[in-house]
Image (cartoon, rainbow, N blue to C red):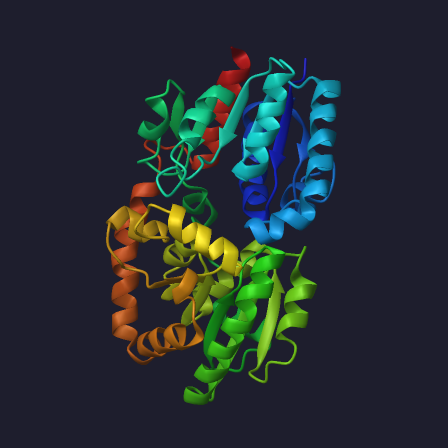
Length: 385
């Protein structure tokens, strides 16, 4: 008899993670089927999402409040769908703000179905109380980072470090980079700058103006500069529109493999803070990260965040390896100065990459299994019990 895995993810990063989990589950259990909430990468595998996750992919108080009525409506819709389908297991992926409310509602309704969360809430950075909450709401937690399980295990939640998906995503990159440049109109010998303003609407609104100014200033120093801008299909048109008036030659691209090819072909990258720093490190691309919210959220984050660093490589190293410009320091002048320094001194940039890759190796799971395979084994084990 087939097993139904109900997956809930609310943002593009979770969509990619869940799609790999789906593939690994199908390899290990061919009769498994799926339902729930997902994005474009899952849709490529035939997944039919309950609604478009772009509707709930928001971050920060300034973004959440206007959409709150819609988010609450969608929450009720997901709960009703779970009650109707009665799946064998519920796998929530990232998006802890949305997911925790969903799990709370399922708990109040006494829906007794195994619940696994894939990607731990970042309690080591802020809101440590979420670890206790997670233990109450979940049966099991799969973590991407090796130092996360103890935060949750002390409250009795079973944790499995399954490894970071970037290890798997970037394991076999072999495309012809000269062909990539030709395909996207990058002149031969041009200096390629990769600009990554994020995958959420508010990130495009807040980061693109800053990144555009930095790119324009860099093009004055490097007349041969070409800017490549990886995006996701859900917001690619908005990104194209936002960069349309930039005089520096540029191209917006979509697709995961094209994204990685862009990283590998680029001389330097400026990126929104997040998993992308691991992808850039794996691809050997020198980079820096930046991030900011609306002023109110910036003020709140400055008061609540306890982690010294925003970048995962820096957290693992407990020192700055990847330059980071967050909240008040997310400024055009600071980002430009550091970008120019590293682009003018490629030896320093490559030293950054070499140091970062030493810490990146800690994200691989033990044994021969890839992260998605290990995650699938955890899900199947939970279903069997």
